[in-house]
Amino acid sequence: PLDPLPDAGRAIGEALDNPIDASPLEEQLNPRSRVTIAFDDPCLPIPLMLRDIRGIVIQEVIGRLYRIGIPQERIRLICANGLHRKWTLKELSTVLGGKIVREMGPERIACHDGSRQEELVHLGSTPEGWEVEIDRAVAESDITIYVNVNFTSMNGGWKSILVGLGSWRSIRHHHTPEQWN
Image (cartoon, rainbow, N blue to C red):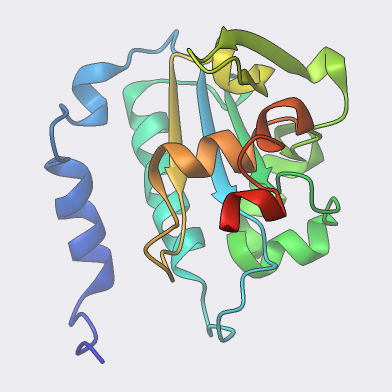
């Protein structure tokens, strides 16, 4: 196991100040920006943490968005639960922490619903004919920030958005028993 970070808050700040292959949020966004913050659902088979790191990261990101001048009404948090069940706000507070849930409330926090066509946007098809359909909030945001816990090499990046915020039409192409042959 890795040694714990001596100061997680400082490490998060340094990572946000120096993102890989991107400018800091403060250079990418302005007060009129629409932001979606997506995060993995609590079904991950990881040990419970005293304070989930995703909530710590999201709190820092929200603070930076406020300092940029982005109002709360232009920030949306989405649990990227893919085709899993929707979670209650109480359950999501184990990931986000009570402060974020109280601050953002049910108006700004939602679970993705991959079956509600009106909440999805069809982006097209791959050369193989596989449909690509994602949550409307992602397609309509100026930026989507995905906060996850990487516990396997098959987790994170574009896969988290396509699966966690995708529809059955998209997910069915690569989440079938045939894909494992």
